[in-house]
Image (cartoon, rainbow, N blue to C red; front, side, top):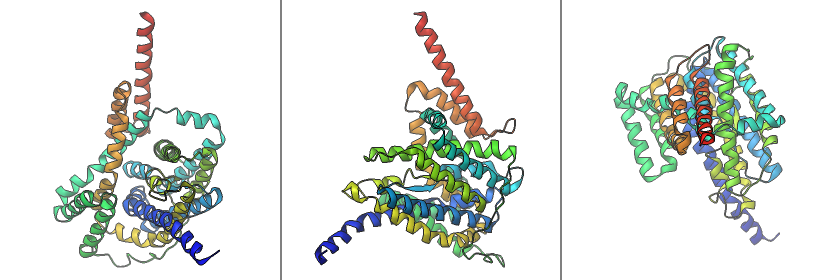
Length: 400
């Protein structure tokens, strides 16, 4: 190969490599605080939370690199951001963080079964999109209110973060949340006093957590987390690939992400899945005009996630010493666009508007009945209302 051809080849790969690195950095910077806060609220120590973040970063690194190199298709993987948002609202279950790890393990097993058992995959795919989006919106609502609560409680710290985010939205929309994260980090460094020994054990390390299975965690965490991950991450991720002209077999991808989720559960990590939002960066024209060249983007994203994994324990130690409301506020800003998109999708179809609204308000209520959390009841209420309205319409049509 001539020098000119070699230089041309390198230039061709420069664009997807930059796009992949950007996708990983934006995805990590936008929601790593959410993941750490969710694991902490679920009972994880700072060391366990850091281990969970590190494990899921390593999982994404391996999945992105291996799959993209194997199939030469820009298939991207990420952690379940909606799942982390859901976990933040649940709190610590009976059995503590080992029970949460058990729920993560069960979620991974369910995802594997979805890839193996076709009727289960069809059942998940048959879940009305309006109901799934309404459930997600209900889970996100309380988190998206956190920035407002933060302004009321800590105005001197929260207002600069909101201002940075707003300016970022005006001039550099994609980087608005990372800008807010940077401003938050600067404020916390300037105002937070770390207690003695807070940074002990902050070197990169994986902390084993032996999963424990409890009915409470299975009902309140595993099942809703599985539904949220499938409906809000895996299925939209496939849609992004199809929209960009890539036809993939979903079953092997479900099995791979399920195995990865099951393995990382032993280190306190939340589930891995197909990327949805950042997938558009790797699979779209931004990565490269030539679709056959875009597979390099997930490879670059995987390498970047592997490097970011090294900072997980340090980030967890620092965030553990920070005001929780401020961390939740940044997470809320990161999820505002997801809330807007979920509400728009949930209320877009007139015939599904009432069931979706019932799902939304039930999920947002945060109630727990018979040991089952609000997302379950929101899903049940929405599906029940949808079936009832469909039956009434059918009876009315037959009576004419």
